[in-house]
Amino acid sequence: MTNRLKNQSSRRLACEACGTEFGCNLSGPCWCNDEAFRMPLPVDGNDCLCPDCLRKLAMQRAGAA
Image 1 (spheres, rainbow, N blue to C red):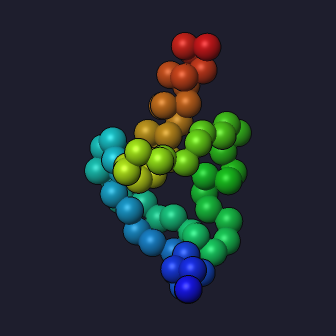
Image 2 (cartoon, one colour; image 1 turned 90 degrees about the vertical axis):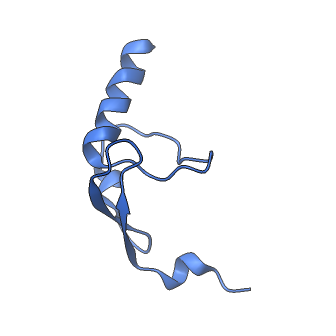
């Protein structure tokens, strides 16, 4: 069985929250690796968030803690 993630180096995504287009690098460092916070990867069928929306969500969750 072939691991399809190994066959993709990067992809263009539309943010689940706002629709902004951004890049995701599956075969190397991605922009999200440089963020100071860590969020779990989406597992509910959704996809990644853009940098701005991910930061907003992290601030919301930090404020709720």
